[in-house]
Amino acid sequence: TGPHDAAILAASAKHPIVPQVYKYGTAGFRMNADLLDGVTFRVGLLASLRSRRKSSAAIGIMITASHNPAIDNGVKIVDPFGEMLEQEWEQYATALVNAKSDEELVKIYNQLAADHKINLNAKAKVIYGRDTRPSGHKLVAALVDALEATNTPHVDYKILTTPQLHYLVRATNTEGKPITYGKVSEVGYYEKLATALVRTLQGKKIQGTLQVDCANGVGGPKLAEFLKHVPKDKVGLDVKIVNDDVLRPEVLNLDCGADFVKTKQRAPPNPQPEPGLRCCSLDGDADRLMYYWTDPEKGFVMLDGDRISSLAASFITELVDRAGLRKVLNIGVVQTAYANGGSTRFITGRLNLPVICTPTGVKHLHHVAQQFDIGIYFEANGHGTVLFSMDAVKAFKEYPPQSPAQKDAMDILAALADLINQTVGDAISDMLLVEVILAHKNWTLRDWATTYSDLPNRLVRVEVLDKDMFQTTDAERRLTHPEGAQDEIDNAVKKYGAARAFARASGTENACRVYAEAASRSEVQELADRVVRIIE
Ligand code: 16G
Ligand code: ZN
Image (cartoon, rainbow, N blue to C red; front, side):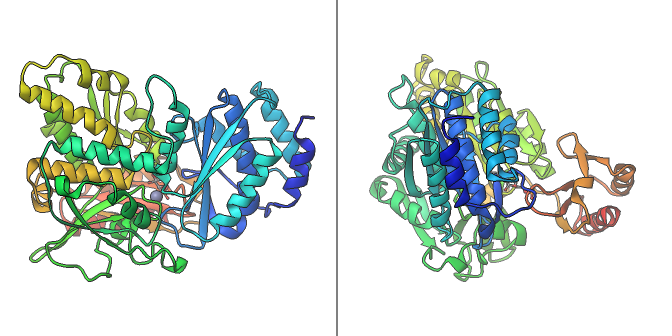
């Protein structure tokens, strides 16, 4: 027994769980919002335990279902440094949420406290935010009941982008420390980005108009708010916000947003694409970013996460070279199996940087990127960021420059470390990064797109009876089960030039995904079809 038993029992009775098997997945718990009341309550219990386990540091909870339809919602936990919940703890979330009764729930809660030597009377803190989904309200109420029952002080940041919540967690936990992350407020986030934007540009101006499709989600109002903090006369940044209707929940992510653009490989139909206009799309919680334009000759051209990654990698390497720090700092790029082979070849061959491949899911990429002084990671779907180690930031500020050019490069690098959200991929911050690089290089999207060519590729979603049958190794690039399947895939791949293919179980849907790449469109089509037939 423990100090919160009675309170948890009473509160839990108000937030029953709908019986089924739940799993804390790549993006926490995500499903139809009607199933989430009890789930969110139980996640609240875990967050309080996590805070007490982490010496009373603030833990974050984000309520969002990102690019999913409006009827879905989700809940995930953010660790003290603004990163995703430590993997080992995912199973505890799963255990609490699957508890069969309120009594069993209390038992597991107390058991976790005992196993991890958590003092349930210690101080704790949880902060949380939600996207614009109407169901968010009710889920926050469930969360608050859990925090009250466990005597956990909490702060409601109301509507936020996912990366803003990550920022606030890190800012909260570094407040008053020798190295702070920023002011502990939403305005603090805007001020930090706006100041860094001016510094990175060093007097250059962002040219032309940028049209930003906000998926009718939280990114719309937040980007508008951010722009109020930007000295337009100094930096340019003429932004036209579209698809920012957050009053009609049913239009969230509907025929717009970064996921639409990436999966449909076309521009959102509304507003009608304007030839030549520089465009980008955010997703429903503003942590993914896609750039594109409609070319009068070639039609739709997309610049996805791989492109952002290679652009950032090339710019940052140039700066590090100019700053004379290449020998001092190690730079690396992290991708997943979905990264286009063209980008991997460009990064390793032309930029001479190491590329590491990890399984899908930001937590995997983030973790590996931390091994470098400058770790650049992006998923092809547009989620990613650049991580700078303490040594790197120190070098930018303290390494004695030998020339004014060297000093400029170091100043830009130092400013980039502030412009780029170090906690998680952030569409608004990444968008500013891209705009800054294009301004420095005086590039259009077409210039950017011609740095290398993508291999023709196809991504297919395959309905299967039991997706868990499909087990992978080698960063999801090879199947270990079902037996023999990988050999068949290998045989199919051998028939084509410069080809590659893999199949993996989705972490967010009950389906398998097949990805294929080959030298030509017709070949990749054939190869993908063959692999789909193997999987079916
Ligand atoms: C989640 C992941 C995303 C990943 C996607 C893959 C986070 C924050 N999000 O949305 O990174 O690309 O799942 O989905 O980690 P899949 O497993 O269904 O292909
Ligand atoms: Zn998202």
